[in-house]
Amino acid sequence: MSSLKLQQIPVAFEAVGAKHNALVDVVKTMRGENGITVVASDANVIIRGSSTGSSGDAVNVVGVDGKLNAVVKHSTWAAPTTYPTELGVIIGSGESFLSEDGFTYVDNADGIFAALNYYGLRFIEPSGSLTLDQNGLVWEDAFNKAYIDLDGFTFRNASATGTLGPGYIELTSGTLSVTYGATSLEFSNGSAETIVSATGVEYEDGSITATLGGTGLRIEDNGTNRIAIDELGLQWRDGIITAYIDYEGITVRAAGGITSNISPTGYTFENSTITAVLGGSGLRIEDNGTNRMLIDELGLQWRDGTITTYIDYDGVTVRGAGSVTSNLNDSGYVYEDASISAVIGANGLRIEDNGTNVTRVDELGIDWTDASAAWRISTTGYYFSDPTLFVKAGQGGVAVNDASTNYFQVSSTGFLMSYSGTAISIPFTAITRSLYLREVEVCVSGATKKMMILASDYYDP
Image (cartoon, rainbow, N blue to C red; front, side, top):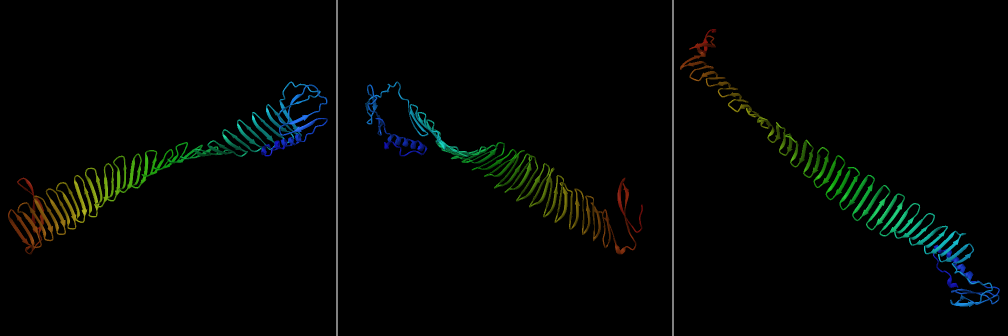
């Protein structure tokens, strides 16, 4: 019967196997008394009694060879009316039962229970339990629990849970969890989640969502704040401002139509009223109306609806309404409007209208002319003329001429007068007394005329 002993016993069934082997040893050593013999083999156990006390026909029993044998009935034998429903073996505190419901082993002293039936296998001992049924395999002790079922393998203890399933691995500890599947790796702590997959990385909590993948980096909250980085550049925005960094440079847009841009071509600022551009063409600032300022390599230009000002290689120029122009440069100053032109420069001052009036001041003196007269004050003296009169006063003396042949001259040599072709000359050498020259008004043919009186005494008409 030694072949009936179990040689290799799983650790979970070690106690049951030991009791089975002990039971084999007990049966193997059984001996009969009082005419009873016991024959034990690997196939069966045969108990034979003597003919003493037997009666009636023999009954069939299973022999050592597995065949039916006729055995004389005992005197107290009674024909059975039912079939046996359970086979039980009790050894010490251990009890084994085999019935149509399966196999059960109980050892209350050691706290062991084992059952094998159509529901599956169930084994319990003080350190843990094992269950194998149509739902899978469950092993557990006071701290740990493991599952093998259609969902995969799960291990759990007081602090963590690990699951190996079809296409994924999951580890959970408190609020923390890690899941690795066929398409992604996921991390979660109860309030935030991170997913790593072939398309990138995703992060999300109660207020922030972040994505990093083939389309770049994108971070946004549940409101209006967002930042995005992709092959086109960077974009950031909140409820008021949006900023871009891309191939066009740095652009900032704010409420109220405000836009600011820095790019390889320069800087641009724009709002609902002002536009400013700084770049290769200089600085340009203008509103949505007619005001504008421009600074470039040619100079400065400023204008409003009325006035335009230039500062350039031509100097400072101001143009106003009505063709008004004012210019200040290295040559001097020029002013011009619809009726007047004025120039101040190396040649002095010159003022003229669009007609014949001209005033000039230079190092030689002062000149003034209009349509009918002209006068000049210079280092050589005084000069005046009109269509009827010519007056000149200088170092050579004084000369007064009318439009005909009448004239009056005072020079260093004396006096010279002429009227209607008649001339009077008085040398200073011939004058021995004081002479007085006075202008008087006389009436000629009813008209008032002026007359010059030269006399040796003071004349008072």
